[in-house]
Image 1 (cartoon, rainbow, N blue to C red):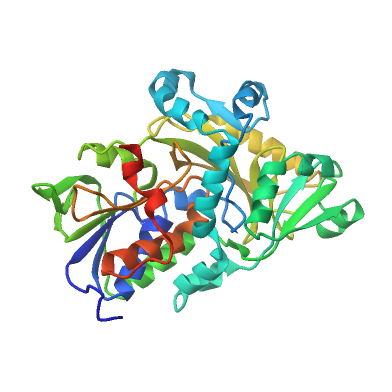
Image 2 (image 1 turned 90 degrees about the vertical axis):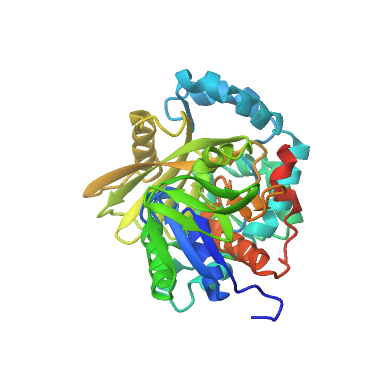
Length: 420
């Protein structure tokens, strides 16, 4: 700890997912008094059910050029990656127009340039965060792979792979028999595998990983309050704490790391963030007969397959339908069918499924840093599909800023005032 660091005043962190827990643990290690607040137990939100992949190569947004023309076929494909609750469309239309408006080469380049600093060295960042905790044993060095029907399908994405090359992300391409050697159980229809090993890995059961980190936070003197946040305490424009279902919490600084629920909270302060939930699904196959050697992005289905302890998790797809609607059966059926397609000899003993909420900001960049006009308020949410990958670095950057250190990444591109 340097003499310039602040060790006074309580910090309240809203959100017990990977971003919130990482921020809280980092602040605790800086010597701050920290309260972690969530309506759920740690690791029970989006961090519970993500694909579990640490992917430093994930710098390309969903909003790529040509997306608009592909949406109808995605919606009509019974095994497609996109689902929509049509009754929700009028409500999400303003956000959707902004979101699709960023599906340009310029937009993709802007996102890639500003996501690269957050996801780089993700494996190292997790190991650093989890050092000295039970969570460290859940971090596995496993290569990540994109699988394609053939090399032409891989080479068709010149923008995405060109940007990865510009950002010094290495990979190797396997074809034919080499694919079969790398993944013997993979269906013959997949003839090209692009392997990324540098700074890639998996978290074995992400929800339990977050719980291990939260337990280390509590054992170190941090406080965990399981209660819904109902509002902010204020002295004029200054944020002085939280109102929760369990009572008020006084705090010098409040960090909003509530994922897809963050925009609802901020509206009570008159702060408008164009954020929607990308409803994501997973299925888990327990007692499974195949154990892939890679975590794999299946490019033609836009979902990820991750080997975990005695199970296989298939996660991904996107459904637009808001925070409150119940799960839809179609995405779960699609993932089940896709599992049988990619692994023709697959058998398993039982299955479970899950729905979670990715926080999708309209320009595909997270919202991070202090808020002008609201002293004491700091934001850390909106990481789309890479919350797990970027969570520890985000937590470190936010904690450094709060205690008076200069973050080693410029946070200007993530400032909420870009929406003013």
